[in-house]
Image (tube, rainbow, N blue to C red; front, side, top):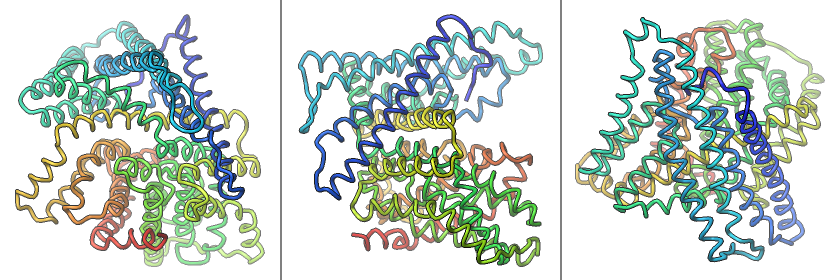
Length: 628
């Protein structure tokens, strides 16, 4: 992302930043209250047979305010994901100039959403519309969150633009930079590529959407706002007037009040608290003491630790960071090959596959698929991959001899088990609540938050400052994902109006291409996208188009969800954007080329796993069918 090099540190700017920070903190506290409410609801409904009439209504109202209160601080912190691989290669002045252009592009969508959000609010006031359900409140309370959030977001973007302009003025243009890449020329190329996409709209709206989207993404417009701007432009062309933009706040409201998506901030908050509570050290201590005796035992323990953490945190990158910090030094101290160690800590985290997974939540929302079924579908493939990783580590260590077996007494093992018992219960406690019918997946996210607070109190590894940071981080990270969903669904609305998925399916059938050829193209598409985009962006970009084709291809929607998460896990390990690679690079002092070479065996194993699930879909489908 194109972070400004300087920032005004005086005057109204500081006040705006403090307001944005306060909004994000309040949003985090609001989501913590939702966790308490939902946990109470699950307990009251299941054990007391007394469901509440107010928890869902209040939680939905809080969720939309949570989303739009957090957006401004995410902009200020530059946390909205952008595909800026090319832009980062440009000289500093050109990066700042392109940053001004991309910020202005983002502003178009933000301003439009704010204006039509305000109109939506005024309509709710005018007609005095009320929410549904037993516990009712005026709908203007929901609609008001959008214009308030967007006003402060506009101010933050203006501040960023001002900062960039000041930076350009402060740094005189160097002759070497002037002769190589002109900032004005780069901005001109950005405007030209965007103009070409818009021009193509007049001849072919589907192709125009594709070109315009690629242009905005290539030049580093934050993905959420790029997709929203593409959808906004498509609505203008489809309806032929600005009246079509009235759907913007409706889509935003629908997304930000969806009960399924409410699980994202809950699982994110719970995962962040757990990651700061020292559970990684406890789990690794347990795994190493029980498995250290075998060839490559500490490496196997690292894989299993990653699997257990994935079943609690749900973020592949977060698991990678914890595993690297916890396991890297012990493995090297015991004589393990450095290449194998770095490959293990980088490639063995499966946070998107082993439930609970935020990726499954997003996919379930987009395809109207049971999140509980998707969670169950990820269990066996996840165990299968952990097993294959472990077998590879054992064989590698056996042949190389580069490992040191570690023996512990049964007393030491039992002590480690006692210390980690509460952690081991975590996945069973959270996921078991779903599969026994005690809680929905969203309520399970609330239970995870309560459980994580309990673990934090027991292990005492997190202080008040760390807890506040968890609230802030969960707000901006969750809102980043939800805003990508908002932008993607605005664009998806246009894609549906133009009947692109149906036409694409018809074209593939008419082409006579074999099914395996289409599947191969889909796999290659995801692997290519994974080189430039993060997993969430890939999901929301492609699923609305590809999901309608799955029945024709003979692929079950649930099985494809698992395959998609496996493909994204593979993409996290492939350059140039592979987030897990750069997560490890930020912790260890090794060249990125060495990290890439180290992770190749794990990429091969993941690819083999993808082929297995494609060929034998029951690997993913057996457990969900059994649970039903």
